[in-house]
Length: 142
Image 1: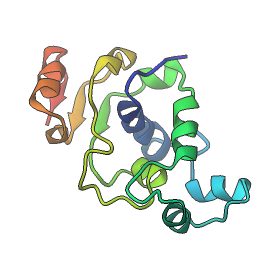
Image 2 (image 1 turned 90 degrees about the horizontal axis):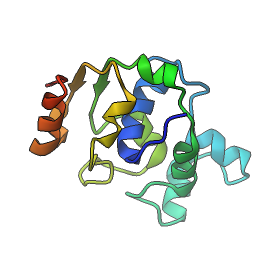
Image 3 (image 1 turned 90 degrees about the vertical axis):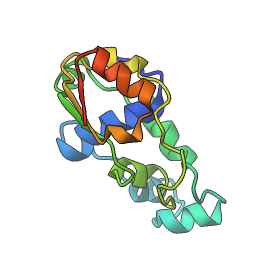
């Protein structure tokens, strides 16, 4: 199984596979996890009550860090979309407005895990260095 170095990059890949393609299952829902652990079923209330507004809920971070993604699924990724409104972000940080760098990708070392990636939409969310790294690999960044 692949090991990611940048959790925020992994989250974008998870968005594609879990919520867009629905090939990485089951889909993670913060409300379900909270309910299973007897912590309520309202992610917003949980975040506010535990001083987690505008932060990644530790239970979600733990889940996504441990989530294994097969090489076969990773090879199926040809396009990624970056946007502040990704569902995976809502599941990680139920009280987040997209106005800070909470989910900014810092490095693209994990590109090697996606051998068939050809396009990244919303690349304006990446800095110039990271967009250049995409271009150097022949990946369209728009």
